[in-house]
Amino acid sequence: MKKNIFIALLFIGGLTACSDNDEGSDIPDNPGYPVTHFSKIELKEVKEEPGAPAVTVTQTYDYSAGRLINFTSTQSFVAGGELFKIENATNVVYGDHQAVVTDEINNISTYDKVDDITQGIVVTDEINNISTYTLDDNGYAISCVRQEMDGKIRSYTFDYLINTEGKYFLKNITETLDGNKSYSSINIDYSSYRTLRITQQVDKSEQTYIASTSTGNEIANTSEIPYLFLTDLYPLSFHSVAIYGKFLGDAYNTLITDLRPEDNSGSNETTTYTYRFDKKDVDISCSELTKSYGTDYARTVDYIMK
Image 1 (spheres, rainbow, N blue to C red):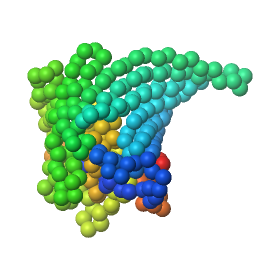
Image 2 (cartoon, rainbow, N blue to C red):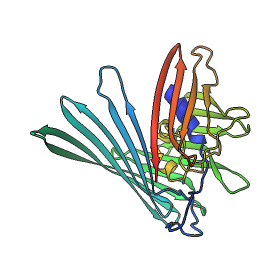
Image 3 (cartoon, helix red, strand yellow):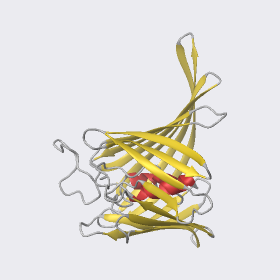
């Protein structure tokens, strides 16, 4: 539950910032779609569990003309003296009022160092999950059909809050399975300036979370990326590319620093977030500390934007 809480929070934040110097940019003057002013966003985290090797997870988003075109997720770890690497690659193709996201491959590589020579074996399995998004006139998704390799079909609808500046903030995602069963949803209430109410429903279970900023000391989100860990919150877990591609809405202008379940009377669960920035006020890391049932859980994600 602690991970879900943070993910919900992460979805809400982020300010669409401008790069310091757009000279030479390949972004058109009037693109007609939401724009990211970076050519690359990379997130890196080392995950450690007792009794298991440390796993380095790297997520890389590549952009052209302000639009996301490729996403690569890599997990690497050492076991038995060998380095293992698992890589998933995804591409995005845009058409008329459409974005098609294809999960292409799953590469599993093993490396063994013999006499100072690194030898490797690569095994490739086709995945071919395909998500087709229908976009409105401004380049934001209004629906999606996801076709999975096992034949399952997931359908989604999206609803937004549009502010006076024409920014789209995702307000609702609803998932339907196999065309007729409403299975999950996320609703985000923006009615309070400093407090956001996020309700997640999966099957017959429902959970509400409260995300807030520091009172009187808000931290502006001057980077162009969504909040970290957003993609882990189901059903948004199937839409990380759309989130980082901004066709699932723009990001909020203030960083969330505190998060809790609406009802945490039993666990006393709270999560706090600490951010580090470079000299240009661009986020370079986010540290999460969750306290639940008397136990602390910590993690840090570093990222690079170019």
